[in-house]
Length: 281
Image (cartoon, rainbow, N blue to C red):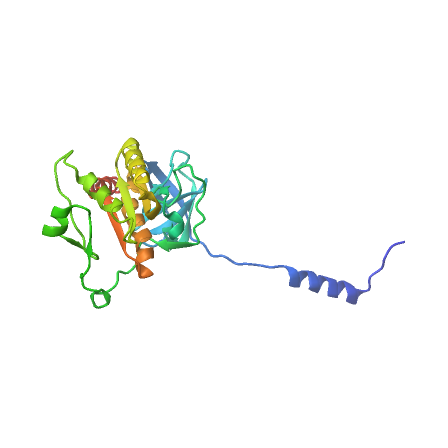
């Protein structure tokens, strides 16, 4: 038996259906990839892109906008760029690069994006933080009044390193620069200082040896290792220093002390120079 509906019932049914429809408007700036080479993409049409903004590309790939030109945007690809092609659609995301932070990263080896590479499973980080932020003003900074014990009596007695201070280690090849930094990390086991070791442009075997030494001495539990090996792209080597600093700032913001070792910044400078040349700056 057929059911008949009067006009008022039909009208109410249509109104109910319309009210249940959820229309979410999303405005996004889109552009077109005009060239892909050596990890650099040039995108036409992203007029609203910001400096340092994350650009969404196909195949779950992202790029970091570094050059804002009159008609195009130059960006470095964070990851594999071999599947990108001219004509691909690029979209702005409205956010800058963020990396996971927190105590969950202690004892782990991660890449420049905070992704685990030690084979110990995923990292359940509760928070992320932007790699670029405004530094605290001079008025809000405490004076350097407390030392960091490196474990070397000559260093601690003659040229002590203070908490809140930067120290440059200069020397020729194979003179023990890395050994001094690693021993300083190992010496923090009983001090409560959280450590971040950022390896930039090193061989994977060298980084593995450092991780093994930290583990053998019981220092890996209070250390985060950020690895950007020599085989990785210049973009990953460039941002690894910023990622490591962001992870250390998490502990600083909570009143804890953090020791960050960059090994070494010369490789990061070379990576930045390479990026600048490719972007024709």
